[in-house]
Image 1: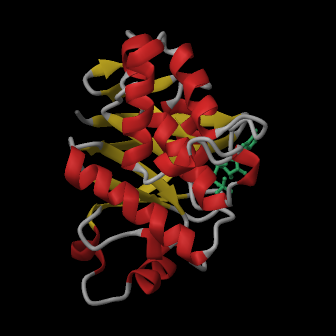
Image 2 (image 1 turned 45 degrees about the horizontal axis):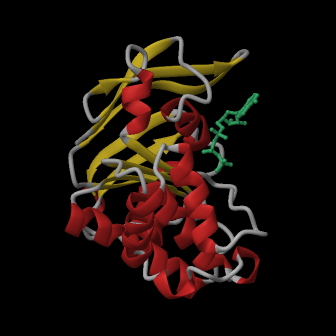
Length: 238
Ligand SMILES: Nc1ncnc2c1ncn2[C@@H]1O[C@H](COP(=O)(O)OP(=O)(O)OP(=O)(O)O)[C@@H](O)[C@H]1O
């Protein structure tokens, strides 16, 4: 199921944060939303998750229009925010069980979905550990597992590797690529780091609130290394 954004404009007072932004992420595609700090990525995520609404433009999640049927749209979406939102005093399983309960899942069904989600992120053996005792990478995996519990078809992640070391960053990036490739999940992954973008990913370049490029990564940057290509277009250090 796809993610569609059309003609989205958003202003903070006189500051235009998003200017007629539009793109489509087809079903099962991993799309990297690449942009330097201040590009508008968090604003876009705020609109996609309905933290706030845009005066113009359209968002559709798996065919559900966000303005007309927000519940349908939000139900098909899993979200991993930039700031971690786990309860550190709960175990991994308890964090997931709490979220499952919010979605009306309990008992055997909740347990089997939690086990399946933890398996997908290679986290089952850590289910009984206190979240506080996990390293940053495993906490992130727990959040991704949690975001998949209600079986969304679109997964949004806002700079999910912030604060992680290089090994954890690579592991998480690889895991989420695999979820798109193997399970048909549609992924929008916001980042300012070019090394998180794979050659075959859809690359959506956002700069100063505008989409500067949208296509398959290697077709866009060609023989030029992605980091140089990004720098040339945005003036930002990646
Ligand atoms: N509450 C606000 N009031 C005014 N301007 C804002 C506000 N929030 C963001 N902006 C501005 O809107 C633009 C887009 O910000 P946004 O946070 O969406 O970018 P970003 O790409 O997510 O950056 P970062 O990676 O730093 O979070 C920036 O120029 C920012 O300064």
